[in-house]
Length: 479
Image (cartoon, rainbow, N blue to C red; front, side):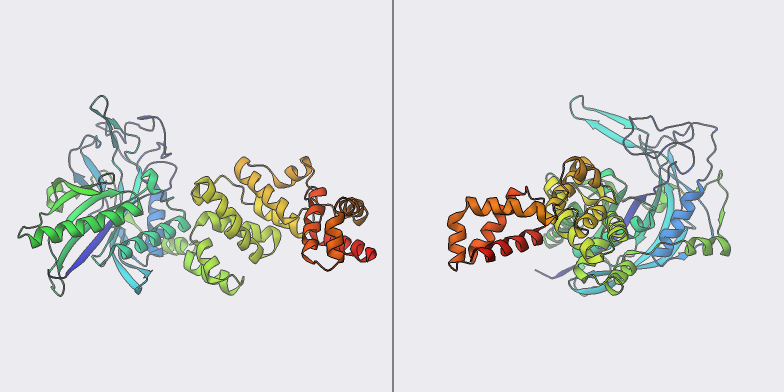
């Protein structure tokens, strides 16, 4: 069998995090009852006129700037004409001829090293609605809530040669858009979706093979599986003497196969023409400078700063900066407790474990950014010990308690007064004569046992160092 090479290009749709839709004032909030976030404009009623949401332009320019694109100073909208039940206007407002961003690039890292992926363009457009298939009634219903939700579509060059590169690129896009706060990129909610254009060719051949498009795959694992399946399907077809058909295919995640939906359309099939109801967009030097001046620190720069200025190990910095939610918790924690390493240790060993045990994604945890810092500070100030701190963290994570209130209400404050500790330890020594005798006879391991019994007697609220100190003093007096 000949060796084959995959050639992949991606079209990534990201819903923008504006409060209202692209051309009207309807809410973009996810999860509303069907057809409740709809008005005359986004439902395509005759005689209505769109008004452009200026935040959509700002978010698109931010994304293009972060992804090293050229910003098209004079861009405009076009109508993409097609009929489908979830598109009540029978056209979609998009950008074909003058997209807002062009010629960008993204650096990705895989096990094979560093590589740049070209971005052909980024354009603004409106989303369509959603078809809901009811298997019990065998009916298809339409929810128009998503009609008019603003999108940017990020179109890559065909620069990918493996599923690993695709996943690295999508993770980089997700992180970048989340840091910019232009999209939450929650794939499970459809706010980030990828169309995968894939072809194969004999290794060394310059010409591209015939490509297929896999639409709207909404998880990274599913994308990786779909790529591998489609690669093998096309190679098997070619080796059997067949030809790959240019078509749109859907990925069935349960059966782990792709199947044909329709023949692949080209631009001429949509009969694009300039949108007559919207003026061209002119981006001035002043506006572009204002957007660039307000760009936040992105993941790569933040990771480098955490390592050089805060002294975090690369592994810790990589994990924390991989999530904007963790970044917010980490930075607030450092602000409160003053110790970057303590903040990192608690996040890496305790907070992430709580997320894993509860099967909650880090981005979805309901946890005050201040709580961890308050807990660490109570530990470092000697108000509670670390064991109690872990208990308080668990309660703050699960039940949303305020750490200081919880400690006070439940009497968890650490006992540091030696005069309060000594009577309890004396009672422990009296109740464990055998262990005391063995220790005095040279069995050092019994000291740890006596420490444990003393902490138990003090209900875990004593300062461990104070307990060890008092215990040692009392045992020395018994020699």
